[in-house]
Length: 366
Ligand code: 26A
Image 1 (spheres, helix red, strand yellow):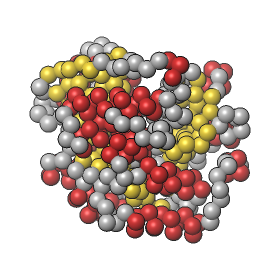
Image 2 (cartoon, rainbow, N blue to C red):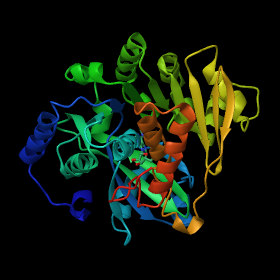
Image 3 (cartoon, protein in one colour):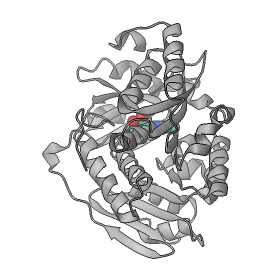
């Protein structure tokens, strides 16, 4: 089984419960500046070849969901990937990666994270990683569903992400109520667009609070399938956003889903559509090594990327999340837009040089 393949120390359910309770209690006196909401996942990462991707009809650079209950053949991937010689178990979940990234810059207890986990060793590992990173975990704990997992299948500089959401799919808005004091004390909010598949109501609840209190509300589109298949949820949430972050393939998917007549490569035109007539919203499109495109009603800016040497890149899993983490940390420190983007690019470069969505063990100063 997956569990027997994992070389994590086993601990009993009570220990998990205790440690989760301990984590929350330990952080009670702190109020994070930044609150993130997403799907906590453990990444099971390994190198594969093109034939392996083809076997399951996976694109080299994509993120998809599998349904554990529908007899999807791709559930086999998890069993297979843990047997690969170069397998790594690393903390994942896009918004959780961003939270750890922001904490890497801001220091301990400045970032809080909401999401739903099970009672198992995977949750143990995620909680421990958040603690090490200085992220306060406000986990909702499901008794009878396992923690979500993501097979991160690496080919060269591409990563194909195959996710079984598990417990992450059971997050409910009332869990926010349980920690509403933290929400009220926070300065800004970050939502992984992936969470649009789970609880648009929870996102809107945070969005309403942010809007009423004039706090930044940042949404990442996360993956092409989000604008494609979760358009109505996206429509519900977009009005609350003050920043929308996406990459070029998510932008293209947005253009197609919303029937834009411009070219799918015209990032500026697509961003303008998302900005609409809002005077509050800024859209930020990353584009790999191409300049980052920044659009608001103030106009358009193009921010060049400082490339790192190709041989320094370990893998691209989590690079976009790290960009968002640096950007959040910039906003939280009161940096202006362009400096916050520069901090995002800097943090992405650090993550590219680590295994999976991770950051250097020792602190590097921006
Ligand atoms: C709902 N889905 C598909 C997902 C994800 C996800 N995080 C939340 N929800 N699919 C992949 N990821 C995470 O994305 C990170 C890279 O950006 C992976 O766990 C990986 O760490």
